[in-house]
Image (cartoon, rainbow, N blue to C red; front, side, top):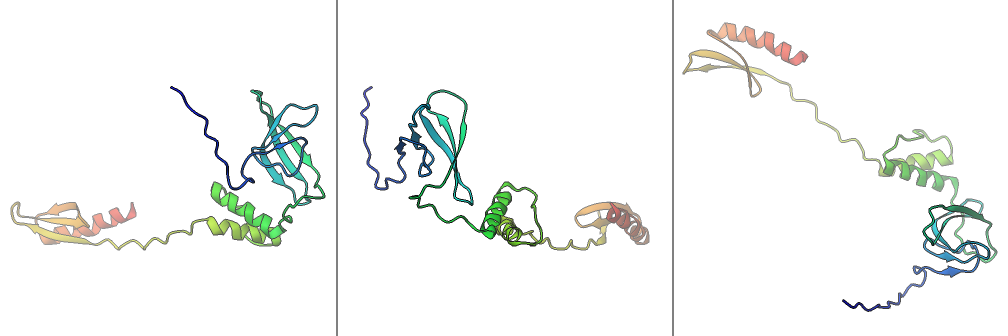
Length: 182
């Protein structure tokens, strides 16, 4: 079966992987770096520190299984967004912890970071669903005409029977208390 290669040009060139001839802070995930005296590396993760430095996690494009981490200083012509303030950092951290369903680090806001963390965690944490109070259980006595005895009921469950009404009432009081204590 023959297949033909279809070339698709994308409208947004930002999303297509780029090839760089040096390690740069402009590289994005999926880009390739052909730096001199190093193997051809592909960017697999990227993060921007608050001071403007960029952390890149790269791996060789060949079948090697090792990775490297590069920390690059901010370049003069970088158009990096300004680093987030402490509140935004805490907010993002709280959201990530809520997504992971981990125990929150902070429950009270003592500084900007913890205030953002609490707000971010609570933004995604599911509020507890209020459960209605349990219905009080009652017992009742009915007379069975076929067998000619009294049956004691708690809800839809029979808990005893007797030959006279007084005996059934006593069974209902005693067994109902036993059922409630379980």
